Image (cartoon, rainbow, N blue to C red; front, side):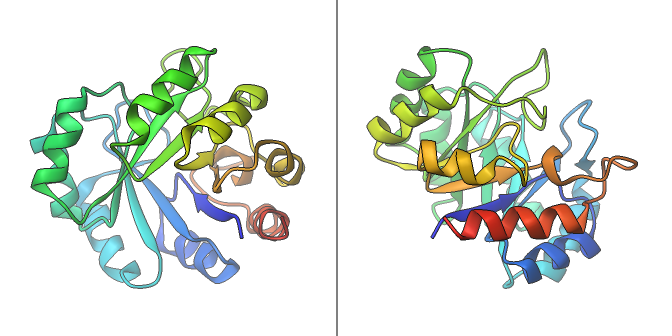
Length: 215
C-alpha cells in the first residue's frame, strides 16, 4: 500500500485529524526562512510530545551541517528529518554517526534529467528520497507539479523508497501513483484551505488519502 506523508502541518488539530484519516508520516517545517508554514522549535517540541507514538514525525530543515541538524532534531524529538537543500555527502554520513536511529529523507528537486543521477547519488545514503518541484527560491510546497516522466525513471532506477511530491491534489494523486509507482506520496499545498494556508482542508485531505490508499 502506498504511504502518505502530509507536510506543512502547523497545529495539533490538523495533525490528529491527519492521523485519524490514515496518514503515515507528518512533516513539520522548522525554522526555514520565508516558509509560510514554518513552526518554531519550541512549538514543535511541545507538539511532537503530544503526537509521539501515533505517527512518524518528520522535521523539514534547510540546515546543511550535521551537528546543527542533530541538535535541532534532538531538541524537538523528531523521528526523521527531511533535508531540503543541497547537502555534502560527508555531512549526511556525519549525521548518521551522530543520530543512528534518525530516519533521513532527502529532497531531490526534479528540474531535469540531472535529478536522476542526484537521486542515485543520495539513494544509498538515506532512507527515503522525496521528488519535489522547485519554484524560484521556494524549495517545496510550491503547488507546482514535478515532471512525472523523470520521476518514473528515478523510481525505476534508484532502487530506494521514493516519495513523490510537487503539485499533488486529491484530483491527480491516483493518476500520479499509477504512472510513477512511488513508495509514497507527499502533499502540502494540495490539501490546504484556500483562505488560510496554515490550515488543512479536511475534506480535501480525506479525499486525498482515500484515493492514494486505494492504489
